[in-house]
Amino acid sequence: MSTPEQPPSDPSNVTLRDWAPRSQVRADAHLVARAAVPCVDVHNHLGRWLTEDNSWMTPDVTAVLDVLDACNVATVVNLDGRWGDELRENIERYDVAHPGRFVTFAHLDWSLLADPGGVEGVNRLVGSVADARSAGARGLKVWKDLGLSVRDERGELVLPDAPQVAPVFEAASEHGLPVLIHTADPVAFFEPLDRHNERLEELTERPDWWFGRPGLPSFARLMAALEGAVAAHPATTFIGAHVGCFAEDLRWVDGMLATYPNFHVDIGGRLPEIGRQPRAFRRLVEAHPRQVLFGTDGFPLDAPTYASCFRFIETEDESFAYAPGEDVPPMGRWDISGAGLPTNVLDGFYAGNAKRLLGL
Image (tube, rainbow, N blue to C red; front, top):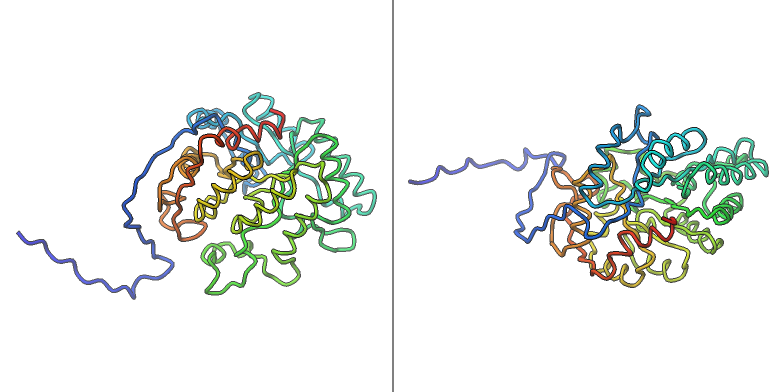
């Protein structure tokens, strides 16, 4: 019996926005639901800072703990501590209530550089580092607003290598607080919004993420500022968020790790980037086994996000979706392949490096 022919289709009716191609690659697939060793997620968000209604990112902490147990995640670093009462409430909710499972980082109130500004503003910032440590913070989170929006009393942009910031990084060292620093977003977010921009689809949805506007520093200037800060404060431990903020160029990251022993990187939020260059990433970890850390930046925290990361880290699977279940990948229309990290580096990458830096 013959099969009825499918009616001819008209591709001109399919818009690029609606196009959601399904890969026809047939390749090995390995589900890795649990990390090979208990791990520390050094880059995640559990607080209220990033929610639209100022609610907790994780309303049910018990459910979060169930996910962590199922995925073999021993500890999560919560980067949402902020300062003052917000910091204390985050620490009470997570660190105090569940010892060993959560570690909270504080932020800095950079508005002090404009009001009151000057020496007084810097002194207050330095004092806030000591306050954060006393409250129980285990590190400082420095976000991309330092460089892109923070201004001093003169209205000038303040970058990470600015003189006003130096005493803060020195204070972090004095109080034993590592600095997890996010200085710039993906390179494409600074490039022209034209047909060559590989993140054009994403930036069309989120135009506020584009930083190619006049008056803002270039990506290169921000990276120079990051390196300047790391070089100027060798006693301060820096963790460059998102693969050192330059996941597109692992040669640059390799140079930073080789030059500055106080510099480290986490992989949070950059699976699509390092998944396009898995062999180069594996070489990076093998060359710097004490300086590359596991993190997800996957929030709200869930098991599928961990499974995708574990699959990339532990297998050599080829051409798989970094965001399974989504018709259109959120960070670029491509698949990734696994790095297959050797077992001799997994302990340090997954947990040992984070434990050493955080004093766990």
